[in-house]
Image 1 (spheres, rainbow, N blue to C red):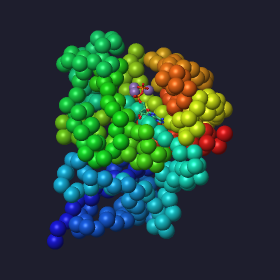
Image 2 (cartoon, rainbow, N blue to C red):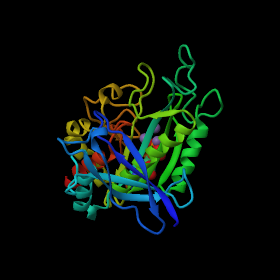
Image 3 (cartoon, rainbow, N blue to C red):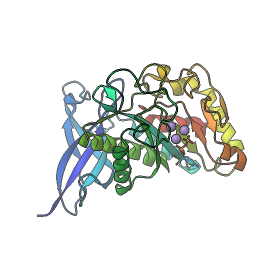
Length: 331
Ligand code: ADP
Ligand code: MN
Ligand code: MN
Ligand code: MN
């Protein structure tokens, strides 16, 4: 009998930031990956004496690591009565996305991350620090960038998986990189971002390197890592006034958003290193020191999208997409 390997991927109950888990099921060729289960007592998700939890496939794609007919299967976590587990943030986004479907929300998330070799960022000297930040952003050459082979392999893998990657770049801090997912609908963008993160960890693992989404992986005068969240509604893509209205709506709900924009946000949003302090809210054209940036092209075209620069690299995109959709579409 012919079979394929389905890698079931889900989000655990780790605090304060959830992590990814995965395991493999052998499935007969021609059949869809079925509902499956796991031991919630080993992932911080068991409640009371009930350790059995359910994995429900929500998004699947070709597995670019194993190749062939193998698949990656993104799942959400349910109780055995098929209701969402308390750690399941996707279910709430699904509801909100459906409620506001008429506004055709699109998201594009810029995922920054840092490659580590043991306890040190990849390529950093054993003692002391690399030269201060300047030449690294979009740099080239062995003295400027570290880990490009991993980054290229990850990009190819995402494309083979059919994920809507829109690009990659080397970041301001050496060993820090970025990839962008989108534009796509809220659920599609968030599901794909989680899968792209899993692929990043998995591919870096083959190189003996780890990737972290820590928003401030090195203390001091080094840029933190964000997950700038670009978004647009149908109306924003047609005219300018809805773009400004969206920024104003975010202003009204600043505290609510900050509270869910990633653990450790106070350390990253200091007002330095291309950020606006978490204590205030500002928006402006081309302003990388603002909470929300209106790209220059958008100000020129008088339509398009805006960028929420506050989310940290370690966000749960299901939560961030839900908050932005509710705030902007409900205003
Ligand atoms: P930055 O200049 O901030 O580094 P990037 O090019 O890294 O910007 O990322 C911009 C993101 O915005 C991409 O993911 C892109 O797909 C997304 N994007 C572009 N147009 C739209 C749109 N109309 N709605 C939502 N997202 C968009
Ligand atoms: Mn970017
Ligand atoms: Mn960036
Ligand atoms: Mn950006």
